Image: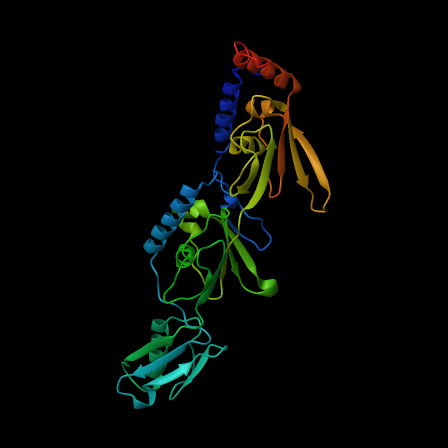
Length: 336
């Protein structure tokens, strides 16, 4: 496998095939996690520009397929109560306070918060049946739904605060924000609650776009949906296309070389260095072998800001230098 000949190109091709194989594994039960301390869960396949467009298309399709129910009432909503043939309970407009309780003539205090308009109609009708009417006809009109707002931030095309007009799910909110951008990572955070009561759920974007309905969470008023931007890693040394690359998905060290266009003929397969910054700010350098990865050893997963350097083999450099001399040097006329 380590023959120092023109056949090294075949070895590079083999590395690319191994990298593709290592990117496949069984679904991770961490795809759907409810915790405010859990890290982002990355996908398994590198995401290209075309794939990002495909994810957006799938999110829009998923959003259209979601069945939106009636919104629940909450603090700040302006409603109008009307009861047929009861002047005292007609054209009454009331804004729901923080307590969620509203006061109405004849029946007194009624809970409106966290009910749908239909449920509030039933509650008022029930109270009227107790004392005044056999079959009251109650109508509730919602003039303002100020309580039902969600925020979408991060790597989306049109982030902001959105007032909901019907029950929505996660895919709906992402579609309202115009979809994700090219800088987006592979996870989306749904943040619910405030302060110490805050809970964060991490959802894998690609699996959500693939139609996993259990990941398409129904949203509540006040939810914040954040699409974090992908980090980057750098690949240098004896690779075809050195540079910085977005860490959009689960990427292992052996895949990094493929991402950078593959290794050069002069690469030292046993000298692949990973430079990483520890949480305390100190640096660590780890050395790996591409030969071991090709033999089946799993490569470590890269983190944001990792630097990967593929070393140069002096023996290969000399051998390929001699080869190039005979390939291009013989027969050439050297000017005097």
